[in-house]
Length: 166
Image (cartoon, rainbow, N blue to C red; front, side, top):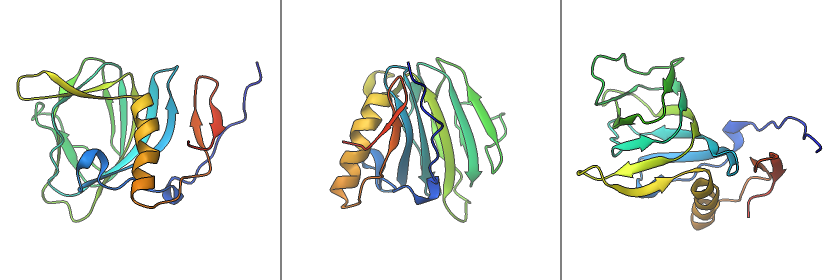
């Protein structure tokens, strides 16, 4: 097997998928999606005060905050995530992401997610699933719908081939 060389993308130059998941206050950039490996990396921005519906992670999550402030409602004693913060979430964690109301600008976070994110309703029932496969499908769909050109390449697949989005 030939191992590909490393991949570089200037994430500031990648296009934003506006109104991610139907919410006009959330934007997303796909950085990497590995369906076979069950992982994906996204950069997301949130408007001040955004509340993301409760969700559960089937795998671990790594979050790096670049701007703004956010926390999980279920963990009031945990310090908020602020620029420079790193957060590790163990598999099975369930929480509701809340962006601080007092932010002057966008909250900008890089998430590296293993497994799936299970979106829950008020009774704790799964109503939607976000994983590497769904993000790899929905990101280009969203870009096309908003008339934004697709990026040249995104790392995808178990061998991490770098190919254009379809």
